[in-house]
Image (cartoon, rainbow, N blue to C red; front, top):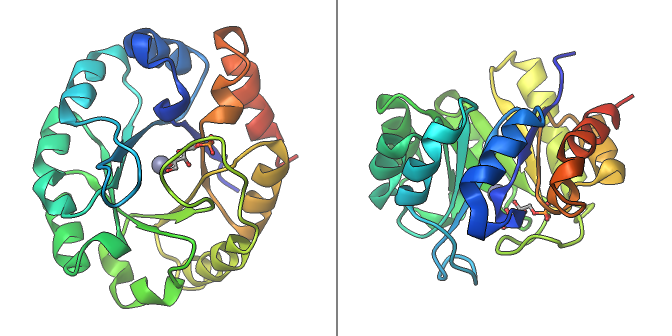
Length: 221
Ligand code: DX5
Ligand code: ZN
């Protein structure tokens, strides 16, 4: 089984020192850096734009995993990829032309991700699996860190993992929200291959980043 990837979410990092945080998280052996981009409309919070990704790009060679929790994501696909995003994930619920925009992300040289909110059924993306490199299952209602894991999402993770394995698809199955050692074990058992973690990585301070990341990786043992 491929090792589970841990993608710390900068949403829980020190926003007054993001450059240093990215350096520390990279040194702490994170696999990806997760950017939670919010527009205050699709979700009730406002966070960062492409210029933050551009400013942080020189601080790490890790893949920049950009999660667009925004309406009309097509407006920002190009700016984020030009800023240095390696993966761009858009929400199924935020656009009526999902296939077109996923194709655009790939055309621009990034990995194309689609995210499903808790109430969105996984069958909604089955007709376009060939256009998808990553599926992000929201295990919280998007907008804020520090929320509790919604266990009903495990069935969705399992269903997609079964399809991905059965059809031998090269799709990363990522889970975002409320990830700690206990819920990491549940998500991985259900078939997740990548975990986004904010609070559980950052809450104990930078001296513990590496240990917290390792704990999440070990949670499968
Ligand atoms: C929700 C965000 C959070 C964040 C992780 O919109 O996407 O899920 O990445 O936050 P924690 O790990 O604190 O739940
Ligand atoms: Zn996210």
